[in-house]
Image (cartoon, rainbow, N blue to C red):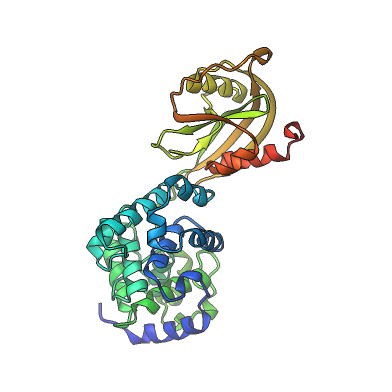
Length: 364
């Protein structure tokens, strides 16, 4: 699509006056741009900035990230969720040191060959870090472009993706991709929002076809939302002589490689107390007494709503615990409450640990 200055000129003027001061925009260092794009997937901007600053204080460049231990990377990532992103980030950093001279590639094919780098991330790195005339269409850009051109095609199917890439290039002046890509995304984040767009403040309102047609809130056309599945869990905090039992999960799965208290999903008709006892037996071979209720932790994911019922547990008559026989984990230990702070826990388990720290039953 031919570049249209009627669209790009007011957009870039608005961006120059309204852009947010974000830490990865300072100098557009490729490492920081790449890191920000990975970190902001499935993450709100305000939260992402805090994590980015903490992460880059520890890993200021590609070499320091590549040399790091995976456990430390996961620990700094804790709370962002989707831990596969962190593992892919770490592996990609090592590959860039080994294969690309310790720099982020400036070639689309080389970028796409890295773990965790999809079409959007590759385009964003090329456009923002290297100022290449490449499209980068995230959810914010999809919304702006769909409304601006009143597109009824979904941006999520193959035909729609091709169309939106063309539309993105049409609003990009040659040689100014760095500004244009960020400007479209910024407009979607600050003005052309999903449910309450501020059309009166939009620099492109005079050219917006969806606004003229009165269908702004009907664009973009997206596939139906995935059904949210509720999940009930029973979890046991096994306490013995002031220490609690934790295990590190196998590397596969949603919480792969993270530390947890033993537990799992409730079966139909099962009481969470019985779930906790059964899961402990299946995962460790321990026969424990399920005692008091500790907490109910609720946590929302994109497709799941988890309600975790946590119980205090122990061994009958304070007998010494046997050696665990692990079936769902690769490592175990007895640790103090303070020791939990140094382990990488899934978000619901971290919330449980915080609840335990406030519980007078764990005082002293």
